[in-house]
Amino acid sequence: MAKPAKFLRNVPRWSTLFPVVLYVLFILCILVLAFSSRQSQSDGKLRHAEHGVANDIPNVPAPLVYRKLEEGVVKELSAAFTKADTNGDKHLTVQELAKFINFKIREHIDEAIRTNPMMFVEIDHKPRDGLVSWDEYQSYWLHERGIQGDSHMKKGMFDKLDRKVKESIARDKAHWMEAARTDPLSLTLDEFLSFRHPESSTVNLLNLVDDILRQFDVDGDDHLTIEEFSDVQTTDLGEGKKFILWQNVRERKEEFAKVIDKNRDGKADRGELLSYVDPRHPRYAIQEASTLFSLADTNNDKKLVMHEMLASSSIFISSKMIHTAESFHDEF
Image (cartoon, rainbow, N blue to C red; front, side, top):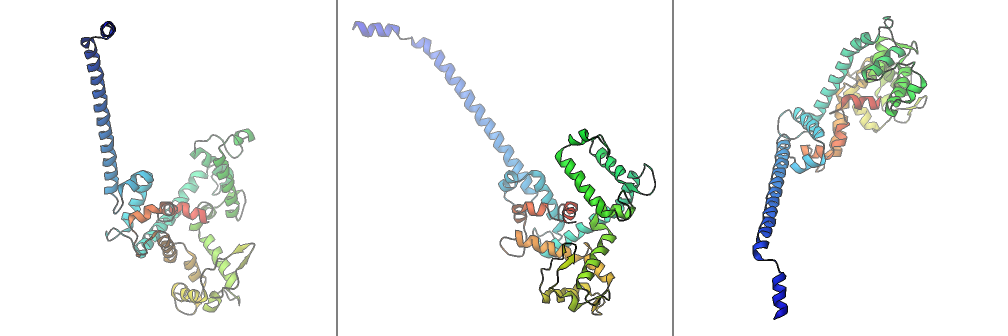
């Protein structure tokens, strides 16, 4: 009995342990309550954010919207979808999509033509001679991006520029040389439009007409017949250019009769061909809308809903439906 008695004497009294145990339990309770409250608030905010985004977008599961795509992309696609959905039935047909794309194309080209003279005058000032030189344009371009320098900057300064900036300058220089038809060092007003917006330039469109006539006008009478246009054997335009032929003979004859030959005289003159190659022609919007549908309409019901558009967001973001200017400039 001596040993147990000695052990009991060494054990701390309950009056000593009780406050310590109580304090530990109190701290644990505080931590548990704080964690639970914070988690509830976090979940509530997430649900509120998801619900708020989803409310603006029809037929889209909230987690898909909020977690897989950037909010800016979702809003951009949602805004375009709403504008294209003219009857408000929460889905798009090919016709609705094509009509909206055609509207965006016309809006872009009209804006490019309207603003071209204003930018031309703004850049043309050293000297103000009715021409924009490469030096004037390069100084303007660098200044707009907050970069000190001009086209004559020293090699050391140029080498310090960001790689993307240098690549952009190189692309601009190549496009400049293509647009400069009279003087490689300067551009006229129309050449400046060809340089900045080749899809908006009548001169560029006339060059496309020349390409078509050179390829298909067999008898050289400056007109195309339905037989000449439907000849899909020759594809060489010279100088390494190729005119892509994706239709068969029947489809091309149908296109000539319905789309190109407006006066139904069996021939297409330059005016009719100019209308045909103009990006504002509805056929371009119809082709793009059909392509987008073929890629995004996963259930093939001929109706495009918002979650299908979000699932193919990268395709739509790079299309003329969303980023019209960028899409054009990638093509031309």
